[in-house]
Image 1 (tube, rainbow, N blue to C red):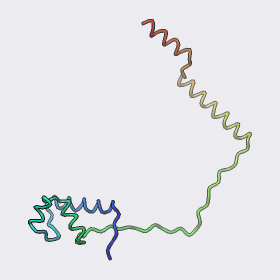
Image 2: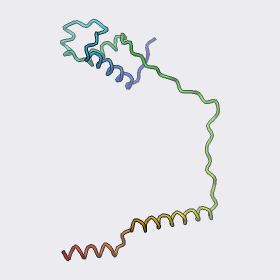
Image 3: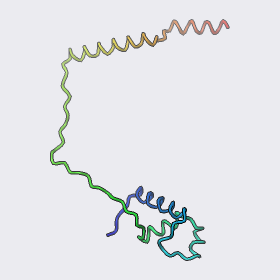
Length: 121
């Protein structure tokens, strides 16, 4: 049974085998001296030749996703009444104003004062 690999699995297999070959691992297929010279002893090319001839002892386990028996249910957010929305918006605005006071928001008057100080220098 020939296994189909994704491009990511293929790249991982070739990279791992090329690293082994680069670290003087024995070749798993007979390649003539002329062919080795033609590919300039490139470990990745040798790994690709081995991969294409199906001699690599590297396999990939591809687990199948689990099936769910029950249908997916939509999560419903509780509906809010208009007065409740208005109250939450007011609370949120108060929080923003309080944080703005802590951070000292810049006012247009502050910018005018800074420009006047720069011009005086």
